Image 1 (cartoon, helix red, strand yellow):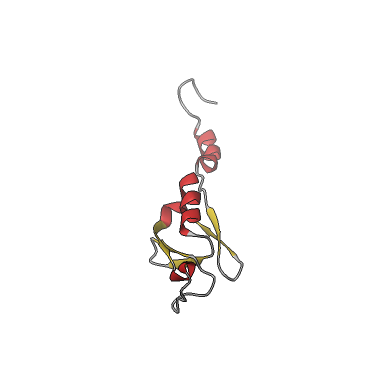
Image 2 (spheres, one colour; image 1 turned 45 degrees about the horizontal axis):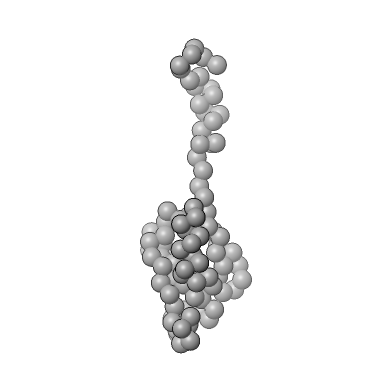
Length: 91
């Protein structure tokens, strides 16, 4: 290491990957596959009408929540919006 109070540039480069962490949330789509989502990219959560007993022709069957992302994409997931909100808040 360098002098006291100054960081050695070589050590800084080695530690940088340790400082950058991203916590992702794992959700499930109606097909049974897992989707990993960065909580920082979630903009909206919308309940589907299927959760209340109505068919929704715009979404695949089995979707209970639609997650809106900053990329203007939407992901229909099987978890309820309350469950998704809990997962997002836990991160």
